[in-house]
Structures are given as C-alpha cells and as structure tokens.
Length: 107
Image (cartoon, rainbow, N blue to C red):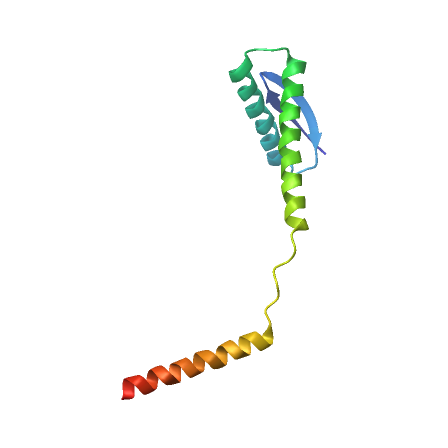
C-alpha cells in the first residue's frame, strides 16, 4: 500500500492508497481543493471543518445530480428497433425511384 501526502487548504494529510492509485488520489484532492477555493471566493474564510463539510456537500450534490441524470436516462424507453419489412419496402421504393430517374434521363 502506498502512502502519500496531499495538501488541502494549506494543510498536509498523509493518506494510504493502493499502489498505482497515487495520480487518482491527487486528482481527488485537487477536486476538493477547487471546491474549497470556490467556497472561499463566495463566503470568505471559515474554519477548516466547515470548509471541508461544505466541499463535501458540494461534491455530494454533484454526485446526486449525476445519479439522477443517469437514472432518468436509464428510465427512458429504448429506441424502437428497425423493422426489417419496412426497410425492405423502403429499399424497393428507392430502387424504383432510381429506375424512374434513369428512364427520365434516357428519354
């Protein structure tokens, strides 16, 4: 298991992760750092626990929205499957139209 130190809001935290997951963990820490920066920009400085709680709420809200969108997409009926008979009829009509067009250009 790998150990690495991440920085969030100027504080260092040593955390463990699976070997090879260090870049992913760093990206997650950056996501939290971005949320904290946006909270600070809106409301100024707060205590560390409050900033982390608000960042967690922002992330939970985004996750909720993503799950809701995914559930809505999953609930949609699948698109209708092509009807082989309709396709065959359409191909026949297209072939007939091409024959007519060829007859007109020959005339």
